[in-house]
Length: 303
Ligand code: 13P
Ligand code: SF4
Image (tube, rainbow, N blue to C red):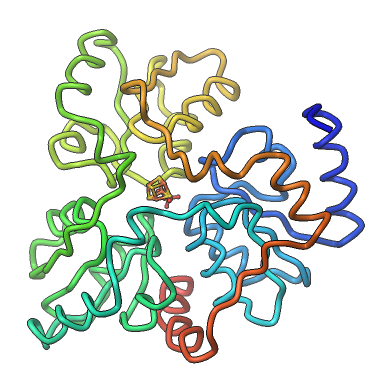
């Protein structure tokens, strides 16, 4: 059964039969987004998982998103369609790295980007997403912040919150990091009338050209609401595809040809169908880790 429509019909049937809540991130393929209950950025996904009433939650995204859903709704069964869908940035920081940074900077609070393992969240003070990072950093009652693992999001926040001292871990998203200043300048030359919306996981030399710097959902809202007829999108390719479909009256351009997260693309229709059919792959987080990580995630969700 590789016919998209047939797979989509089966997914909708299984979803209803099992009373499953399916949450998809905007970077998974559009045909998977189309059969989900909600399509979300990382912040909305965590909020929806925390409030879910269904006993079965399917997270169409990468592993840390499944772990966060389990931590926020531990009594629910949380499934991931692809267990191989990891996040290379999340793998760039370990709990030992965080503990070492804490020893070096004992007065600093540890702020951890949600793109991290449950074990790292468990030794952090508060989590954040790209849409909540500024608000959380400003609200923390401390003068120093250790930010892990994304050096680009961390330095973006540090530039907006100059009254605090930031200690950054050197992680990055390989997908967003790949885009260079030369790529942006070439795209701006090709489309001189376009406004530019960019994700803060990109480097400073790219983000500095942004008319909007924001999360996936903020980029979508900007594109929908701007008066500009041409928009250059500095984030993952599925956002470009989604906007082209949603806003046919506007010209939507991507930057570079390789702006794609291969891990998000592992969440195929077939993987989602088999996930619902066989109730696999179950996300489990060890009890002690779950309890410790929950504190920092709860602070984020309720911020
Ligand atoms: P947001 O959904 O918060 O924009 O995050 C983007 C991302 O890279 C998720 O892995
Ligand atoms: Fe991780 Fe980057 Fe893919 Fe997001 S886009 S899941 S940060 S590798």
